[in-house]
Image 1 (cartoon, one colour):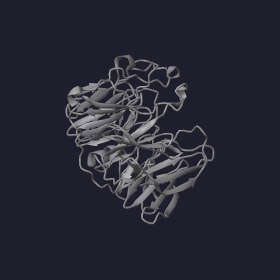
Image 2 (cartoon, rainbow, N blue to C red; image 1 turned 90 degrees about the horizontal axis):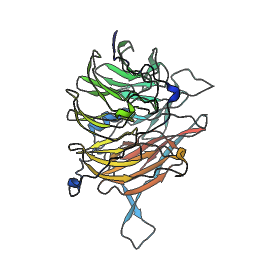
Image 3 (tube, rainbow, N blue to C red; image 1 turned 45 degrees about the horizontal axis):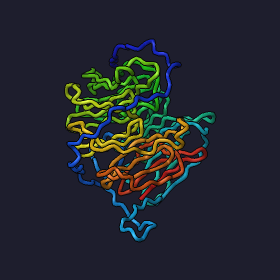
Image 4 (cartoon, rainbow, N blue to C red; image 1 turned 135 degrees about the vertical axis):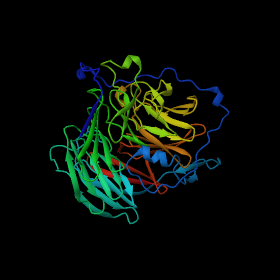
Length: 440
């Protein structure tokens, strides 16, 4: 087993002083040079599976195929029609949770089957053609006192891999739901398990990345970053690109590692100077890292969005934009939701801002605790599809940033929308039930 580590420059960090604070983006300006340049969208491509990795999905498809249905608006004198976004199927799964529990869920899809985990470690498999339950299996011991919270599921061929905010990694046969092997480590695994070339990569809550043997779960190597004892939601999924695995930690640092040896190739910091050693800022990298044409795009809560040369680790450009929501790359643009709930279109070549859209920010502007939390966005059918934790799904026009549709599902949504076979899939969380939702 190999061990690789970075020196800890913040050993005296006092977690008790940390608060849920955001870096403000106070220098956002429209680039007038982009005003008359239309956003050229990549072609729509039909997606037929989702392995669990947003970064992998974005590398394959930048604009998911989605045919939007329209109906006549209430004002029949207007020629503008309204997009229909209707629930075509849903399935409720009963379980119990505390009112304020924070969960992390996202289904995976493979061979027209949808797989989900609930907070009691029950694995459900549904046939998307018949909408029938194929099986329900318990893959970890069930606790009657508390639920598993950080539910992360991925699939590679017919094998599912799961972490649940504990120190267990579980491999499950997707065909019958039987556990193949499980591995216990000395850290809390809280990222998506990402597979590549016979290895599994998972990050932890204490800024480590584990590499496991995909066949039996044996540990190949462990990389340790700078210890920072705070985190907002979890760890972003490791990003696989060529011979590297790129990981983001709660210190606000991004490491590129040799995926076979854990050798550190380069490191970049996503923190503004005022956030590096502060006890009052959470510097997490929570959003999935994205990559295109040898350039990695990374955003952190510490205040910076960077474009990084994947070969040498040099920053090509950086913007003072802080965020924790998953963002999206399509064509020459990045679409980002920052911590001020502004939707921003950024030219990934020049770093110029094409437009800024103020999304709804608070349920009650007088109460800071009612701030809306956006999970992230994808592009489908030439539109941006956004989900919010209070159950709202929004469709935004890419050309002018107009919100064309808002649908309230009435249940908590904790993940970025999943687009598959011309449909939208979401996993909603309630106090008494979890619900799988299909929209068309």
